[in-house]
Length: 74
Image (tube, rainbow, N blue to C red):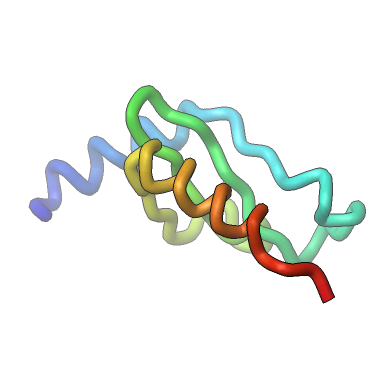
């Protein structure tokens, strides 16, 4: 990845609306946040909103959520 593509991704990610899961239980300090882009889902640490972020293809995110949903509960 080039530095120009990283800065472009950061600019796009800065314009997104970030949210936490309703399952975070109101925890304000230890959670991840996600933002839905046009073709990617971005993830960041809620403690470091200006820190590193990563994006995954929307299709991969849907697969991840489906596997988490299908996990057996203790």
